Length: 85
Image (cartoon, rainbow, N blue to C red; front, top):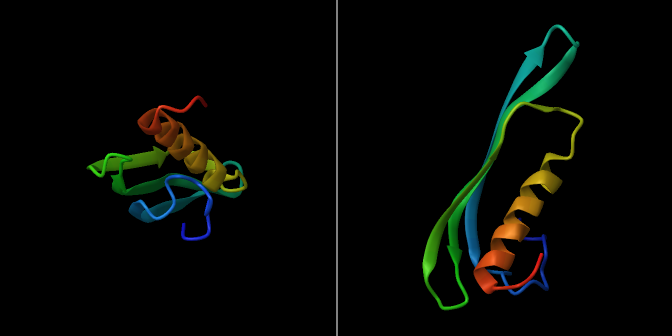
């Protein structure tokens, strides 16, 4: 995520690891992302570290999972910084 939202107030404050679990969906002849996640530490504006974890389950492989996780993280950041979403 080093290249995501470089001009954000949260830039450089998130230390996280992504993970993915993919399986075959034989009925629909496609892959299914059974689990996609992001977990780690986020430093707040006040300098405190909090633990964050975001997961998306059972998403079709063609979906934009990065956008789903990024939107969730953005909502969390706005809440922590007291900004409207």
